[in-house]
View (tube, rainbow, N blue to C red):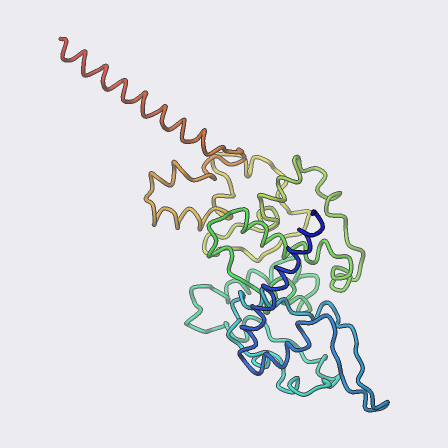
Length: 311
């Protein structure tokens, strides 16, 4: 029963992927690309041997059609960013040398995207340890996949979801030996060992983004892209576990603003789970404490009224 349940789950996920892929295939141009790039294998005509050969697709070139459909660039054709010469197959080997576009190639200086402050982000990024060490070889795409990037931090109300999505971007390189060495040229450090100083390490990784400690807080930006090296990273517990927590100016900043606009200030203070940083809150106990407070206040008022009437 256990294995059959696992198999059914796998089939279900594959079904979702096929449906999302089918929707994305509505565009003939993307359909042509995804005929190969959404599958584990691809077939081509070997003109030298006059045979139809089948090969394994490079796993880094396999597109997740579910994530592709959910990404912010889902409405674009593949050749909007990649050379139109990719529309012929087999692809010319020289195309692999083609430099990929950056975010600013489309979003820089465009008033319709001014609210996202891409130019300011670029200024911050050029101060970061990534740019200082690797220069133009470290592009936006090293962290933000143009194929699957989603604005989770702006759209999600679930802090854990925001943390998981953000940390997965960091760990996609820092927890992958091959990708890390491709960029850095040296061996991947052991993430767990480096953070041995951090108490309750697993809980921190689950509930706090890497960038809370490895970036400077910039009020005008949702996320500062000035990633600092380990020597400058925050290692002081009081920075977060205090009434004036830096998390309120970073991780919880936009969530708090949105809740205040929707629910009002008082309700935000009462229900906001980030109000006391570092606690594992139980919603039932939160409500019980509110009820007890209200009953206590009501008792004081009633007692005062009766004393006045008695006099």
